[in-house]
Length: 235
Image 1: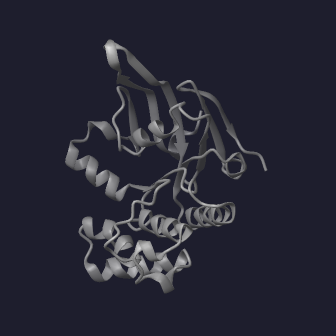
Image 2: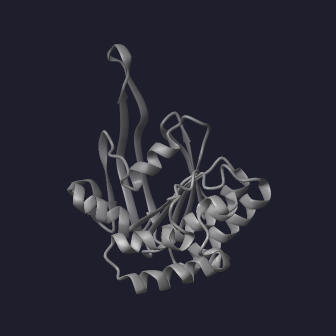
């Protein structure tokens, strides 16, 4: 068991069911228990359809479980009302998805600034933080470009910068390099790992890339909605 003082996230008895046709129910998650240490990089792996993304979305409060609890720094996330949950997602958790979800009408800089502006940070401070992050991801010279003027790899680097804007305790990534070629994928992974380590964040990443998973601190394998194995990586 992970030492309590080091735990940033704790999930207990997570179940997720979806109603189907003819009164049937699809059981995606079937009782997940896990603890995540502060500053840890955790890879969640397993075949398609075993509930990896569903679990990630619940851990990041993007979706509610049918049963079970998720606590971050000892606070029960799903005891919050909708406004508190929105604030949690904005300030405590950062998200990077397979599809970057950048706003097409805004520049890279404006996209990275957006979470800070939503959180009420004044524009000057938000812009300064966004420029720092764009420099860290190697895109300071592309700050004024809109998403359709950027390559796929550049778009995902902007998405990483945006996820880090409010200095979240948790960074959750769902197949962030799933649409990139091998070289761009490798570069994104190295960048993500480096930023997480430098900023002292906790990263939970869903991936099919087993080579990537082996560079994490821990690998959790899901199978049929349950944790099949949970192992620390020994380098």
